[in-house]
Length: 421
Image (tube, rainbow, N blue to C red; front, side):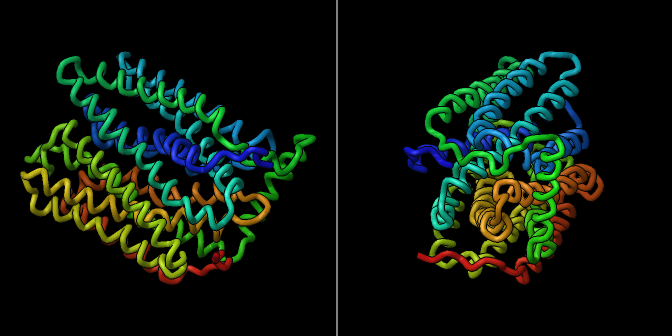
């Protein structure tokens, strides 16, 4: 059960979801700029930085274990400290001759730790809050998660871009990654005091056979849920277009004009993404408010449109290739606002339509892991596709990829009635 003396959600939701967002932002976004600065090819960058995000998809395989031992809080703390240490090793590996192999390996450890942190954090959120409070704070959750994106890009990545002008990219990125690692360790000590337990294990394991039986029950009951095939299709397709665009957009902004890019430097791209993260926070908060007023079912199509349609901004940038940075800011701010506004709908859908049942934390982990199937394969081939098609045709393909998302949103069924006050 939860702690007897319950900490107000305002004291732990923003900080713990910030700690959830930072590792993912570093692996999927900041690392792209880092490796580009260090001379790694686009094809290698997109393939490997997409591949090492697999733990965020495969986390359902070990999520039942977190239902069997200790409290959710124990796993949150352990993974925050492990993530911090992994980032320290990433930082120091950048000084080695074979930096790419070593840093990717440490990023992979970080990804496993970060994915496990996600499971436990969502378990705390689901168990510590009522359904109405889940809807009330879903905007806070999304906002805090993406403040981490803001700090990783407009803070640490921007700092690395500026420092690299005087000390070289390897040393600059070393200090940036080490700073992120230190921050994660500090957050672990903060949550030691402030985070609720999130409930104890749902099943006491007495033998290895008992453990496997519990794992099988978690898997079996997930795939026996009503409309689960529909829900899986919805979860995967909702973010499919994002998976294509996610890693290519910063590379497009940095690519030389002669190669079809816009030719901006790392600091400029980082500042643009930082501003976009602020726009995401605003979109998340307004999206949560929108859902709380209309209900998720009545809001979902509007959220899907807001999430997917703004990708047209990147096609327009590739078509006109403006020299004025303000057009880039306007495009990224628009897309990230829509991203924030629409993303909260997907998270709340998984929380309230897919996760309910005996194994809420594990089943939510299954759903959020499946969600990454929409972005990992597309992310892995995005570099190859953009090289083959060129940026203009590539962003047309991104727009085509939004159509399945809108169709499945239109027809996805709801199982549970929404809680009303």
